[in-house]
Image (cartoon, rainbow, N blue to C red; front, side):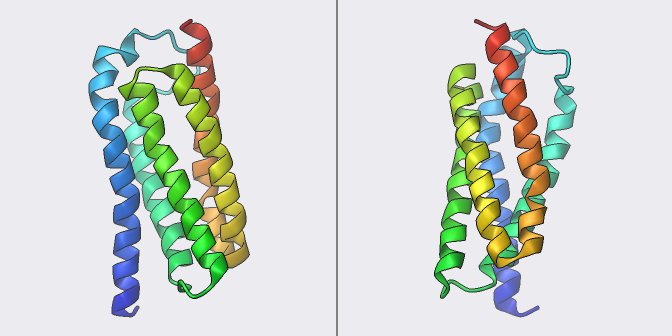
Length: 159
């Protein structure tokens, strides 16, 4: 792998983990102070599961991002796909800020629905460039889809 691709690979991973780090700034203090007090549906995963799932998802997202970025910025479809990826990554961090930081399940619900749609759009563009990159986002959209249902139920159980 050329040095340029190694740099792109490392940067792709770092940018995804950075979004997760931003989200964790708002998530960690809210879990013991607020999240534990919420009524949650019976299918809510244990708190310990979220860290390994998101750690894995951010790594996979980074690999997917790299597979697109390495195609070069000269192609409009690549730059469009990268912009869409950036938008969904920002929405990813914004969800934690809204749900945990603002302690607002309704704000979180609105953002996570838009996030799911942004991931879908990103996947569609990624598939046009690299099938592998598109498929790598499947666990991510699946987990976020589950999170939409979980967020909706938390909203409904905590009027």
